[in-house]
Amino acid sequence: MSSVESGGGATHAAYVPGHGLLAGRTAVITAAAGAGIGGATARRFLEEGASVVVSDAHPRRLKETEAVLAAEFGPDRVAGLACDVTEEAQVQALFSYAEERHGRLDLVVNNAGLGGTAPLADMTDEQWTKVLDVTLNGTFRCTRAALRAFRAARAAGDPRGGVIVNNASVIGWRAQAGQAHYAAAKAGVMALTRCAALEAAEFGVRINAVAPSLAMHPHLVKVTTPELLAELTAREAYGRYAEPWEVANVIVFLASGYSSYMTGETVSVSSRHP
Image (cartoon, rainbow, N blue to C red; front, side):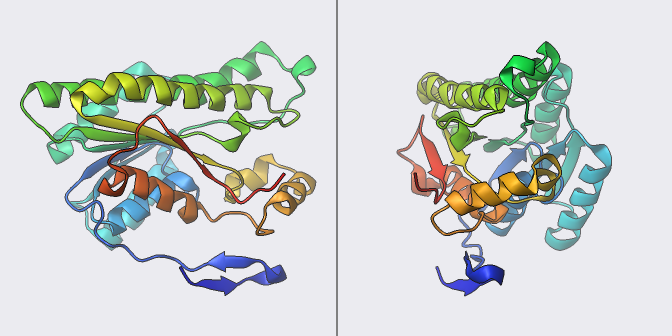
């Protein structure tokens, strides 16, 4: 991959064109509205030939994202449905809609997550529960719905199986003050990935996770102080943050046939040094 120079001397990678790695596949991607990892993943999946159902808890932003992607890649390949992953009925509706829209389901990216900063001694039950419910329980609900769909397809004679990619975080491994709820949730996503992968193998489903360190997007800027962002950026070996599409590239790899013998793994997408 070639690289280009950006402001401040940090080297940024050049965008990688699609190679048809997901041609003919259908995907559900949660928290896919906007300029974060979910939106970048939806775009990369489309560039690799997949059809996508994008989902988000924010209907207005979702409609805007759906419209932009449909205009570029065609309305037959892009659909959107609002979904709050803390609501089981909405999760069921999302997966039913995806199968009805595209006739089958091949790929699921569980990207929905919620962060925040609070010292543990001052953290409220509400703060703890909200982060866990979106980030860990939401991943559980969507993984369960996907596994039921994949299991039914295999029982009906479909040999193709499916793939689930969960968005974890390096904070599931590393300690960071003020992030106990988020770290616990992301560590839980990693453990869920490992356990679910063993159960899913019998009906041909692979489940892996990515663990980004610092991927820059507008929401992160809103919830993180400039001082902390500067500190976290300085810890990265390249001296820069990741672009969301760089994380999405690894998700594409895990969703594609190039990772056919991988399951239950969490792949770090980080250049951070100790």
